[in-house]
Image (tube, rainbow, N blue to C red):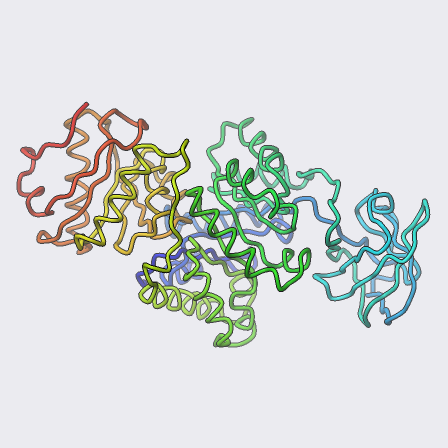
Amino acid sequence: MIQKKTKIVATISDMRCDVDFVKSLYEAGINVVRMNSAHMTEEGFVKVMTNVRAVSSLIGIMMDTKGPEIRTTATATGEKIVVKTGDKLKVIGDLNTLSTPEQVSVSYPSIVKDVPVGSMLLIDDGETGLKVIDKTADYLLCEVQNDGTIGSRKSVNIPGVSVNLPSITAKDRRSIEIAIENKADFIAHSFVRHKQDVLDVQKILDEYNSPIKIIAKIENQEGVDNIDEIYQTAYGVMVARGDLGIEVPQENIPAIQRLLIRKAVEYKKPVIVATQMLHTMIENPRPTRAEVTDIANAVYYGTDAVMLSGETAYGKYPLEAVKAMAQICATTEQSKLDEKAIPVPFKDEEYDTTSFLSKQAVKAATQLGLTAIITDSYTGRTARTIAAFRSRCPVYAMCCSEEIARQLSVCYGINARYQESTGYTTHQHKQYFLKALNGLLDKGLIRKEDTVAYLSGSFGEGKGTSFLEINGVGRVVDAGDAFEVPVD
């Protein structure tokens, strides 16, 4: 497997998810498997999750919700409606009415009330544009802006209009329950507009006492405008450039991407850049130069992870796509310039021991030439904080549960692994560190002549980081039980 720090999320379909296939992608560099609830059944979810767990207990599993989306209803004939530039048609909001060439119906009951004259309706990811030129109490009168088609159950975007739909649909709730029942690791919630959308998902998770983490997908201007409160509430964020590129002017996407990555670093939360990163590899065995540059720029900006969608879900070259993405990430990481890195500011309320020591560990790794940073992890917080400082050397997080290790699968540079813990007494605490060092030595990841940083806490499980130890591997291992760690 290529050694890279940027994580890869790969979308997997139940139509192609056998164990050997997932294993090949894992060995090529994926860290997280994503499932799109818009295109899968309950049986499909279970099939994918079962096969992923058969490959490795450390692969993160992420389930997308559909969120408050709008779609056209089925067409009356079952065929696509062909429209020409300048055609006039009515748009209504009635899920139970079929769409016709004269009147298109959508799944947003209050569309006539909420959408003003002058607005644009973009059908099927913007393939067909309709401009609202008039409205009555019963319908919107629209003019077709380009030759195109309107198919059954196609997406409808309304840029600049705040959609008054519930954050979670009945289907979303069931998808979340399936994720809980099968111990998935992340819920990627679509069309997050403000923190309440995140809290709505968290409420369901809390009902089941589930540790699943929420990734907020930012797909419209409202989500961008409220990004601070979203970061404060969610585990992490996804820059979902598909719908985002329709909801906001496409020329604004690069700036929004940089903003969301910078905010992620500031809040010390993981961020994923998604959509069309290697889109041409759905049909072709090699990426375009523009796609290579797109991935590289996301890495230069400082993203935690990049994502593949159709490339691995149904594309012709899924393994080649993963290999290409992993190679681009690894090569780009080698050429990143420290002076171009986003500084990680400390907010007054966040200026705590964990953040301070994490920063010093990363700084020491560069200035003292350390081989690795090692931390034991009870909640994952220290490892996530280290990730925000984007260490150039490997970071090994020894987690007391596989669950915590998988939650770190979206965090930059964190090599998380499960190591059984029998408690955090002073003796056991010391043994945990020694066991970690010996395990890394056995795998050839460190050498006895190396110097490493060790971040840990001396106040028991889950009480936070309280000390930073910098020492020679051989010195610690050879001392064995005589080696002392700070005690409370």
